[in-house]
Structures are given as structure tokens and as C-alpha cells.
Length: 135
Length: 335
Image (tube, rainbow over all chains, first blue to last red; front, top):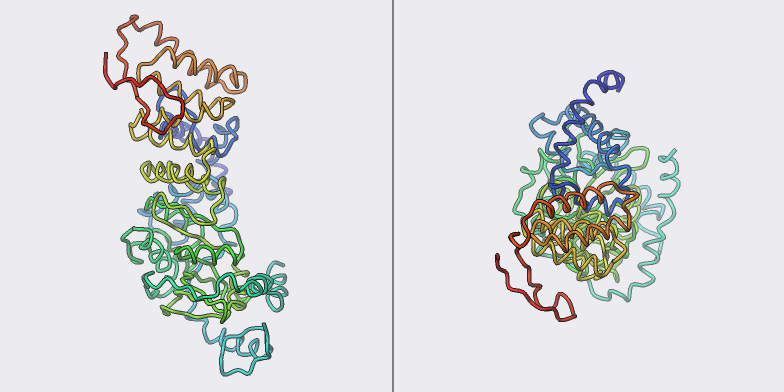
């Protein structure tokens, strides 16, 4: 983050040029069609500024994904498919977010715990555990 | 802190299950979507597997292996929710996050829509995050049926499911073929879920989704403008014009509707009407939005440059049923 800050200024000029090129995507081909995003987002006045911020954040998230093992070939398309809000969320709390992975490795642990909770009548997983009447 | 809270919560309360079971007569018969395919997960790959099951149902022929480079995050040995949504968009599908209620989830399944869920199968202080697909339920038995991990048909008590699901903050998603709305979709969240498709230039699927949204919410301004914008992006200017016209007619106070209509009119050569529409946008919000003034100036410049009577003009006769008032139908021609 720190080194990113130092780089931010020179890089941002290049990026602003990029934004202008990017903002040509979609219906805004001519002077000014209003995009659906602006209508649903309904915050037009802040659009341009937040676009620059969002683009800088996108670079941040790309770096974050790369450093977590995503190949550089895949990073661009993955970040492109995210909304500005999603990019912002990832930039700020990626490591606190749940990553759905493997349930298999934990089955023994869950088995023991659920065995206990079943017997307590808190869960109802195993038919062979005598459960208190519920429902 | 959250971990402690969740731990405290998980041991006792299952309010949603109690509510649903108290109302079990709503679904007296078991429901099961047997045709949803099953992909057993590879190590750590429940995300790609679960996502592939939903995408197959949504008409995308894609395998879990193909989804791994799109969602899997190696250092976390798992897949993030945001990336699951983003990957669905990359296939031109609208991922819709459901409201966090068991009833909503059951309604979708009963409507034939499998539901992707995030569960924490472990405990809050020892999380084991896991994606599964809800494909059925049996309320008289108090059970839910999942495609999960290596099990094609994992039957779990509703109460247990609620606890594991609550630890995943009740996250549930449906992904449907383009133009098909989730049964429980709400207007603004649904449109907000469609808009990101535009960014990826999935214009066809976006316009199909806006069209479906308009069928359910005929007054939706955002859906009309989205429809117009997505048609415009595909070069379908007449269709775009109809959508913007409808928006301007039903929401006369929308400057955006008039502005976008003005653009399309100008491109179709109807500069006089374009000027009127652009002027309307400026009157409405010109002081707040410089772009409306820009549109007007642009059109006036074109008006000044074009020799009178020589403007090529394409007319777009509206198909029957688009507007109630009968209009003098013009033939599409170039004068």
C-alpha cells in the first residue's frame, strides 16, 4: 500500500488518459449519452472523479490477486468483470472475506463437533444419535 | 468479535427454520430439481464445481475445470463470493443475490431455480467455507437437498442448514438464462445486477434482461434506459429510439431519457426533433449537468451545417403495441 502511494501520482496521469479511453466504451460514443450505470447509480456528479479512483483501485486489486497466486494471464479479465463497488470491497478487505473451498478435509472435526451438538439437541445430523424431540 | 457473536448465535436460534416449518403447509409435497447436473468437487474446488452446475442450468456449457482460472484463489485455497458473481457475468449471465431469507430460497427452488449458497460448515472460530447448490426440500420432513462436495444428493436438516448458512451471512445466488427473472427479484437490485453486463459488452444478454425487467416492472425508468442503451450499443438505433421514447413519454421529468433520445434522433437524421428533445433535457437539468448542454450544442451545430432538406433521414415506424395512441406510421426509407 505504501509503495503504491508513492507511485500513485505519476501513474495516475497515465491512468487518467486510460479512463478517457475507457469511458468511450458503451453508449457514450458521442458527446454524452447517459449510461445505465449512471442512472442506476444516480450519482452522476461524482462519476468522473470516482472513475479515476476506481481505476487506481482496480490496479490495486490486480496486484492483490496476483500476489495470491492468480496467474497474470487471468488477472485482467477477472478484475474487469467486477463492479466498482466490488473492486473497492476487495481492495479494502480481501483477506477477511470468506473463500469457499474444501469441506472434505474438515469432516472429521465437524463429525466430532456435530456428534456432540447432536447429542445436545442443537443439531440433528446423525440418525444414530438419540435426539431430543423437537419441532 | 464477529466470531464470538456468531458462536453465541449458532448454538441456539434457528428463527427462519421455525418460521418455515410453522408454515410448512405452503409446500406439502417435496420439491426436487433432479435435472440439475452434479460435478463432484476436486480439492478446494467447490466454487468452480457449484458455479458450473448453476451455469449449466442457465444454458452455459462450461466445466468446473474451465472455471478454475476464473474464480479460484490459490493462496486462500478457495473462491471469493465476488469472483463467483463476476465469473457468471463473464458468461453473459446475471447473478442475482437473494434476500437473506429461507423463504426466498425455497421460493426460487420451487420455481425451478437451483440456488448457490455459501456455508460455513465449521464453526465461527474455525471456519470452513463451502459452496453448495440447493436443489430441493421436503418441509414435512424438515429437510433440504444439496449438491455438495462429493455428494450428489446431500440431505440435511433445515435447522442445521440454517446454522451453517447463517454463518455465511445467508448468502444465496441464482443464475438464470438471459431474460428469465428470479421469482423473488426486486426492481432496483435486479437492474443493478444487470448493469455490470454492459461493462463486459454482453449487450444482447443485457437487453434481454432489461426487456424481462420491463415486463415485470413496466414503469421502470432504469430498465427502459438500459434497454435503449443496450440496443444502441448493438447498432439497433430504431429499437433504441423506441425505448428512449417510451422512457421520455412515461417519465417526462427524466433529463437522461430526453438526452439519450436526442442523440439517437440526431443519428437517425431527425435533427429537428433531436433539438427539441435536447432542449428539454437542458431545461430539466442543464444547470446541474453540463453534458445536456453539450448534446444540445452538438445537435445545433449539426443543424447549422446541414443543408435544409438534404438531411438523410431514417424513420423508425414503431411496431404495433408499443404505443397506444395511433400514430401516422412512416415507412423506413431514406429520402
